[in-house]
Length: 251
Image (cartoon, rainbow, N blue to C red; front, top):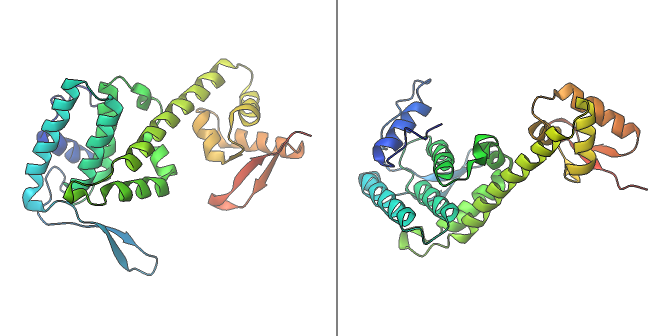
């Protein structure tokens, strides 16, 4: 998507991407933050807890320039795995937090572009954004652990990198399941049944089936799940958004 636009990687590209992401809103995208910002947790009662203090606004351009130069040099040197370099770039970008709003969205869009450039093109077909949203608790926990002592240059990047690599691996697993499903033939109901019984996790959501089998309606998925429920091969648990299905052990 950004393959022609993001070369070379520079601050101008980040501003351009930020502007594109906000182009359909009234928000003035395409500019670095002018005031210092904080990364906070908001409780249901409205109170906030500071999770991280990003780089001051006055030094944002300086830090971004240094980050981009270090990434490009490390990428050209080719001594380290490109996935780790992309993960480290994203970690530092989120720690710098260069925009008043939209930092996560810019970081995830750049993640796609940098991974594609490094030859990891799975994000063309599988949404890393959705995988991150589905594992939001792990995302924030890993980010919190790896930004601790970041300003003192003593942060441990491995909690974040482990999470980052796991998300990418999950994307390839989703892609493999979709490819296997497409080769399986049969009706749409047959494909749902095969996926649920052979490929789905022991506990899964309807949304997981929808993601794994694009082009098959929720109505068809629900129909098959009800049939499998009647056959005592799956069992529903919970209701609403929290509802899941559990595959039953074979007798």
